[in-house]
Amino acid sequence: KHFSSNEEHRIGLFYRLAMEGITYLLADSLESMKDACSNKGKVAEGENSKKKGGFNPKRLLVVGGGSKNELWRQMLADVLDLDLCFPLEAESAALGAAFQA
Image 1 (cartoon, helix red, strand yellow):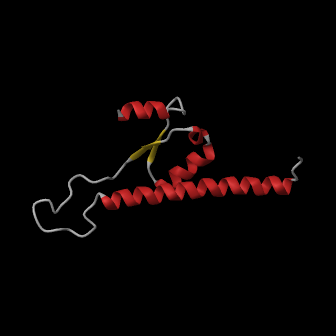
Image 2 (spheres, rainbow, N blue to C red):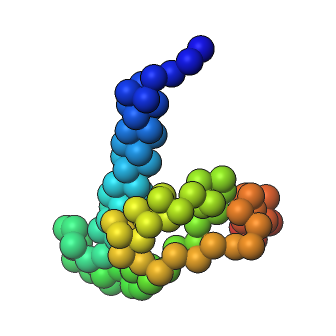
Image 3 (cartoon, rainbow, N blue to C red):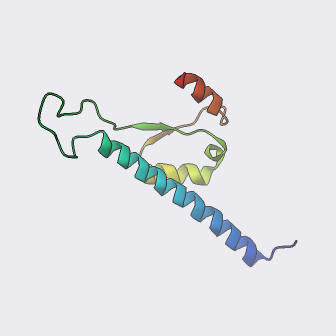
């Protein structure tokens, strides 16, 4: 099927909106992890009342096919305000699983 430029434009907008949605969802997930690992919630009395450490990443390793997309890389950098690292091999999910083992 032939697409008109208007249809192609709409498809491009759909992809961009999907990437933006995923980017903001990732940002929200990171904030939730930070909150869960901080002392912001209710603090119980006793010896274990304060959580140690916390979660405050300074950089993010971005892998997978999407990591090759320059637009998405820029979206991630802008929204997350983190240093982004990209491995030489973008398809490195198996490598990440090996690190976790």
